[in-house]
Image (cartoon, rainbow, N blue to C red):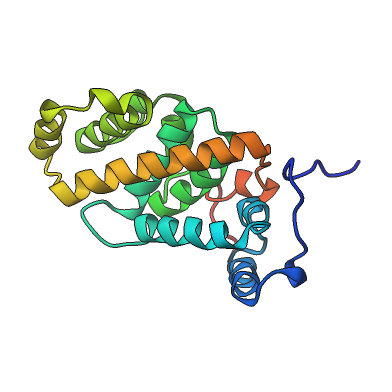
Length: 194
């Protein structure tokens, strides 16, 4: 059986990419054992690839009031609301690994309100969902609620920016027909073999 296409758009060969992009893809492949399809799909437009991953990394890899697992919770919850299979599957795998919890990504993707998360994380996801689905309705009461859970203005900016950035990512993934790599489905579900 042939493998389904990873995108509706052409995917360039890795050896045909600009050096900086090829180097990044090979580094990701070295670390994870495969190249996530988002890298291959976006690589056909090098300037946009660079801008996308620069902003992605600035939001998702930084230290701050949100843990890296909480950042992934935002992605999984809002991507589920946006019906983005690629991001739910890929970031669900990252969430399972960062949270060291094989159940959390499925719980959040299905219904974060019933997930095994803290009240603080629930407030964070309530706000992220509002940003993703009805940002025009955000008001001062939302900021007060988040502040009551210990979120700073910088944290609120991060929650907002992650939800907004992944709304862009969700739409690109959905329109391109981006297929999640098979490897993502099992990541973080079982202990690593020693």
